[in-house]
Length: 371
Ligand SMILES: [Zn+2]
Image (tube, rainbow, N blue to C red):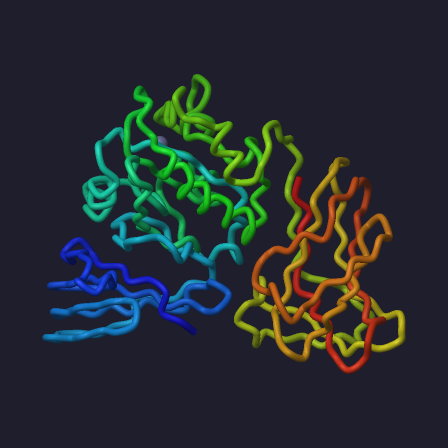
């Protein structure tokens, strides 16, 4: 575990010391996020009092309360600069209860990201977003944890399945800096990695492309952001995605079937969903299988496992096209890892074999087919 980010609330003062150590002074409250080595938020420590904080120490000058605000099972971006908790959001346990399969891009119609993030803390605002980026320099505020649902799209099913990113500035103006695009696209790229959001414009969309408007898009209030000046070409280059995209669905398969010899566990904290299965490696054919009836098309096939030193470094996944891909399950757990791109049709079955170097276990947690 490591303390990665200090997030002062609006009462805090952000300054640099003469020694060049970035520090914060909080007069009433500081929220400090603690992250695992995998980037998952473990908990948020909220300290009320008068404090000075830098990346290696906390100096408490006067203390009135210490509390743990909450935990998160999702990998909120650890490089976001500030945490300003929004008043409005829907508590959830994504992705156990809702898939995250979209990122929605907004502009705030306001001058500063700090102003928008502060407005979200006001319960008169009626809305929120997970992140707000400053147009001039890419400074980031996080307002809603990714496992919760932010109120940004004006269309509930899109809210349920998306991460919402606001950017200061106006839809009618060409006012976004390269630094802002780069920081925001980094967040979107992390959603591609951790949630397998398809990296194309069918799933990384503008607010103007959200359903719900009787005309075309923009949610029920027909918003038009981010507007004609938003540089999608550059943005998608920075997320690593391409143009185009398709309308194929995403299939998340979290319950592998097996012969009955695999054991069930829920103890690993970086698992997907409620549990996973495991089996000792052996020179035998006794795979776990994930199967789904799919709409025909080309999909990226991903696997999710929980890491551990007893895992196989050559876990043999057998793709629906019978190609075997070995993965090291001692690393890269707790997120979707690409196995390959495969043309799927009918019932598409991915298997995890136990037939590899003995003395280890293999973890059958979840598989995803995403276009
Ligand atoms: Zn919007």
